Image 1: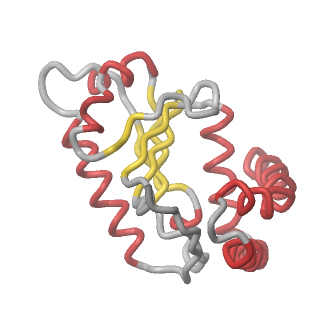
Image 2: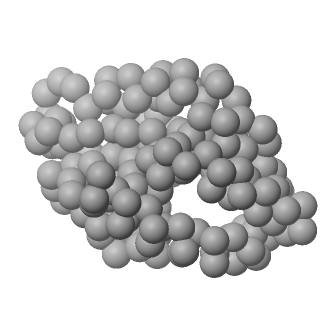
Length: 180
């Protein structure tokens, strides 16, 4: 198996278009008869660093899928597999369903949570906070680029490198998000 390279690149304005195309593709999979999740309202939102204008990021589109029922999504996970996603289950986070496209050349990730879940809110709060506070986003970009340079072959070490920053600013983001 090829080794996954951790790469952080400058912001690409095309990431918004890539998300919109993927959103349309996902929606097309959940329309029609015999689809469990379609009968329930759900949201498809762009999250992660590629959703923050101007922020450097790993070139992977992160998608938040907010659903009314994880069980219904489980029944329909083959719809995402049909468009190239690997179904990973909770993948280390209780109450999440995780899907990824690509192994070493990952292009998209879906993080599915129940609507209103703490994890979903955390993703949205952090995204909006980085957008509202560009100086925080610039500091985050520096840390991510440094981590990718130091740990280009270890996602665990890369994540550990930025962990203190993320934990601190996620807490600030949640407080800000709830009070705005």
